[in-house]
Amino acid sequence: MPRFLAYGTERRLDRRRKEPEFGSGAIQGVAAPETAGNATARSAMGSLLALGLPTSATAALLLAAFQQYGMQPGSLLFERNGEIVWALLARLFVAMVALLILNLPFAPLWATLLEVPHAHLYAGITVFASLGVYATGASTTDLALMCALGVLAYVMRRNDVPIAPALIAVILGPPAEYSLRDAMANSGNDPLTLVSSPLTIVLHTLLALGVAWATW
Image (cartoon, rainbow, N blue to C red; front, top):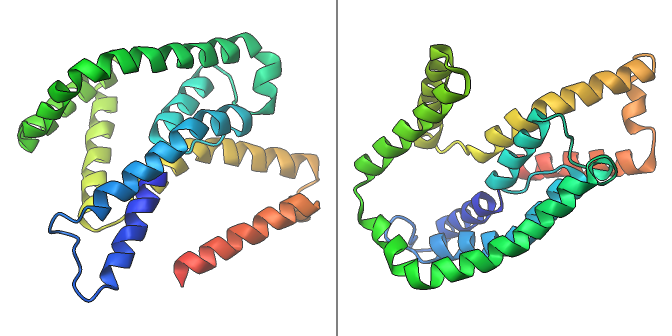
């Protein structure tokens, strides 16, 4: 998500220049997302485990995996599934060392992947994605749904509609609906319970300001 926000910001700033550079190999289109990604990579796991908020595509996938096994990332995760959390954090340190060992000698090899034609690369990704979807449930309906979502994502990208917010909405939508129903049931269907504390008022205010600013 931060990569998309950084890229979108740089693209909007580029439109204000007298001579826009985006579309002709502007270094800002690469530097901004990479800087944002490096800045948030260290904090993505912390926000996911402590707050249950995915701030990257990888964290969003991990959130879906946690929910699939009946675990809800957040403050209670450390209390109910502490052994999994600390084992995961320990493996992160091991993974950092392993990545350092692998990336130093093989960096030129990974760079050669950029020479693969896009058509071949997309075809390979589609094949592996189809195998993964079918292996999970052995259902052709899932394959059809995957193809439909792929077409929808292509149309969104062609019309400059950001995909990252839609992905996060799909993942966070069900927990948000469950929490809303739970709050309404516990308050006797009183909507004022959503703004019954100073913290919720501040959060809703910030959300409203963010939407208003983005619309403006």
